[in-house]
Amino acid sequence: MDETPFRVLEEKNRSKSYFWVMRTTEEFSNHQIVVFNYSSSRKQENISNLVGAYTGAIMCDGYNTYSSEMYPQITYGSCLVHIRRHFVEIVKSLKQGRGSYAVRAVELLNRIFKEEKKLEYQNAEEKALKRKLHLKKYVDEFYDFLDISLILAVN
Image 1 (cartoon, rainbow, N blue to C red):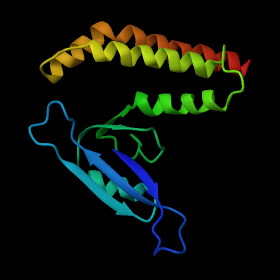
Image 2: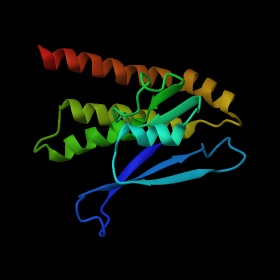
Image 3: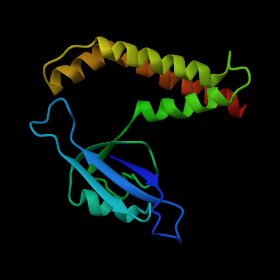
């Protein structure tokens, strides 16, 4: 689930409007379903209107309206592509990127994506098992790096 800002010419009082998008997973769904919803705002009510009584998992970018406090029946997953994008933006803004935390974060995330591409599986259960066996150590290394970086940055 994600929201994308855009400008509607007829809405002169607003600088941005939003398309909210939800879709089923590509790999294991019998039917691909994509839902687009237009909204003139990015408010919490958009999620409420879209998810209704849904119970399950939503992969999203971490925007604070995706809240397990507001929707305890939903398990939220963080999208590593979205996380990586922020670090890439930081790296691009640096005059000298070598040795920066952002460069290291991008390297660690790239390794996760590289290893992910090597996996072969037939169903969701096998995918989860292979991710746990082959990717968990890289994901743990990334999150350990974030914990250490945060401690160093605060001190």
